[in-house]
Image (cartoon, rainbow, N blue to C red; front, top):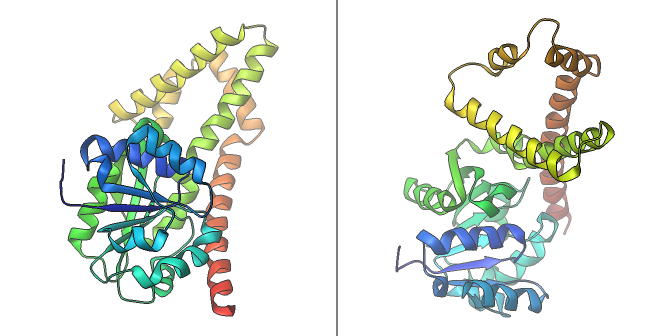
Length: 279
């Protein structure tokens, strides 16, 4: 556990909490973290009680004394938040942005100085230490900055370094991905009720089925289509179910879903750039 880094969170939502929970196990001591947000003081006190971190009402002061600044507010609030803390940002700091669609260049502009920015797209599975996170460095971010970011996000799951242009796609795929799985589980639970299974029994079976399938995919070198065919006996129950999915163009729907989420990430980033340019 390091004893040198001080970290300021701007924003105190669920992703910030997931990172705090992971970071305080192996990356830093709770007393090295300060959390601030725009107005929800009760939330700050909750995090302080739960994790032993510091809570601050003065965001500029929190940033001024931090080695790492983590932007964890909603993307639409980034301009206002950065305007408040920009005077306190130092060139030797590292800014980590969790903001979907917001480029490192935008963060650099809002910081009003040349500063290292690493953009990250974790997902909500960070809350249980199983996030799939992708990170990308801005033009002032060094290999050491990327390594620091990688170590930080590894406290809540796996980390992949990608070119920044790929982060919109990452957002549509793995950033939003848990919601797609939850949506599938919703459908499976409704179907289980329709066919007469008790809710608790169905939930246990569904969850273990998903966990088992994921572990098979992780452990096997076989393509998913091969694993699927191994389960699908000719004329059997699985084949009958798969034919219905094909009838409803299930794979096409999933692909369209991911493409639309990717496009929305791009739209959000462009809208923010326009708003900043007009302000």
